[in-house]
Every structure is written in structure tokens, then in C-alpha cells.
Image (cartoon, rainbow, N blue to C red; front, side):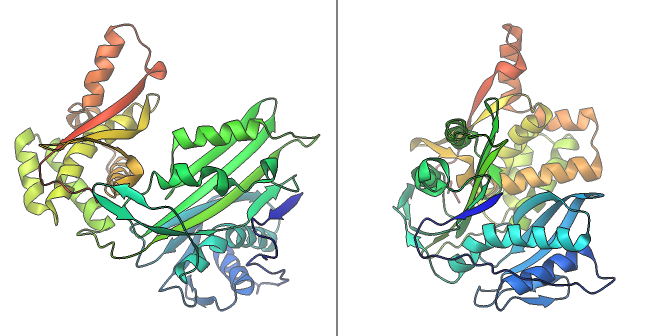
Length: 390
């Protein structure tokens, strides 16, 4: 049983019921896009992408990375000039016919991410309290989807998820023009839960724990599972220009990987990155983040806090969330590309991860009898006096 819960009375879903028979021979991806066209007024299919009216160049394409008989997982990839990186939302289901797969997947995307995203990009949304970070004030408007429900008539305690999580999520935002937030709470019975708080695709464990406690307190009332999901898009007012792009961060990270693996001296790596970077602060981010993120990939059983300390010469320490650093995600993306495409050997991996502060701390902890899976690590980065957090 599926349900739909709106925070404000009188609101209606973006999606409207539709019946469509796709033409024979078209791909499953195109069938999904055609379904979205029927559900979203004004959406237009152009080749392998959709375009949406009055949304400043928003496009969407879909892929099926997992497709096994009736089981499927689809990814919707949305891009916009104001996005620092792509918005990727996935949905999974079971359906025998391609037409049913397409209809279900399209409905899920329309009723969740698009329900919040389209109004946000058209300038709609409610003002949220300002966010203070690195000496600057950031003001956002939030566009909130309805709550998608499974086996429930209303969300836990009758409150939408955003009203519970807004303050905590806002504290994790930074200088990007657009942030997208996914809130997901599922009570599976037997005390088990499946919960997520994602900001721009990244799970934030400390915020997710709040959803876990909420899901546990949600009575099943005989249902095998209860699920609540909500999507929020926050658009920042004013100028949010950044001196570098997602692609430039990945390119600089690839250069750093090559330098580390070639055996270049540690200080020379920093100097070469500074000469190549479009912004000196980006060179500091890549140089600092690469070894630590590589170590996290190599030792995933070690938990790492979502907040870390930045020590700026002459200005003391500032605690920030990883979601407040633009370079964090594309550096990680470049690392994963390196593993998948280049398949580095142990010596290559350790030429980078071996320089991390995380490895030094792990060695000390293990030598003192600790187990990796029991550790919770925090991180700190030293930056120059003129460093700017983007």
C-alpha cells in the first residue's frame, strides 16, 4: 500500500494519473522518459534527455545499472547550470513488463525529487534561517516534496520528515547554489531499520541516526514494513560563484594521483598542484583530501566522523561538515574512477594512502590492541592563512 502525505493542506502532487502504451521497440530508458513527459506538464523529450520548462536548463536522463528479469534499479541523472555536480536519484522495484517498470520508475522520480526540484528552480520555496560559515552568511529557500509512504496513512507521529530534520540539515550546508536532501525512514520489524539522510547524494551518518530512532518508534500495526521518504531542494540567494568546476577538481585530483604514484617528493607535489590549480585553495583541498579519502576507501570498516577541523594559520580552528566543502565529493569521485579504470596495485595505492594521517592513527590504535571496526576517527587539516572554503 502506497500513500502520499502533504505538509500543507490543499496541496496536490505534481504527478497526475496517466495511462500510456509505449511504442514497440523503444528502449526501457526512453519509456521512462516518455512516462515523465506525460506526468510533468511542459516536459519535452530531446534525444536521450528530457528538458523542463522555466527551470533554467534542467535536463534529465536515465540509466538502468541493475536489470535482472523483473528486478531493476534505475538512476535518474539531472543536470543544471547551477548544480556544482550532477544530481543522481535511484529507485528500485519489481515488474515483469517493461511498460510497468517504466511507469513505476517514472512515478517514483516525479513524486519525490521532481516534486521538490521543479518548484525550487522556478524560484519557489520557503525561506529558511541563515547559515553562518567561514565569515559569510548563506540564505536558502526550501522546496519540499510530499512524503511518499508505504503501508502507512501518515508519517511518524503525523509530522513530515523535513520539519524534524531542517535545523540539523541546514547546519551542514555551505556555499553551493543548490543542495538536494533525501530523508528516508523505514521500520522493518524486529527492531530493524533502514534509514538515510543524504545531502547531495552523500549519507551523513550523524543525521541518519536521528531517522533511525524515529523509525524504531513508528508502530508497525501489523504491517511487515513502513516507509516514509521526502525530498527537499534548497536554493541559495545571491552570488555563489566558485573559481573552479567539478571537472577541474577531478582533473587536478588525477594529476595529484599521478604525482604521488610517480614517486614525486611530497613538497613538490603541493607546489605542482598550486601551479596547475585554477584556485590556490583548491590545490590545498586536493593535496589534503586525497590521501585521507584514499585511506577511507582502502579501510572502509573504519568509521570517520562527518565533521573535521580546519586549522588556518593565524585564525585558529573551524569545525566544518564534509558537505560544506565543494572539493570533497569530486576528489572522492576521481579516486573511485582511478580504482575502476586504472586498477592500481598495492604499491600505487600505498604511495597515496600511506601518507595519510588516518593510517598513522590506525597503526597506533592497532598496536595498542584496538580493532579497526571499533574505531571512530576524526580528521584535521592545516591550511594557509589565505585559504578560502568554497
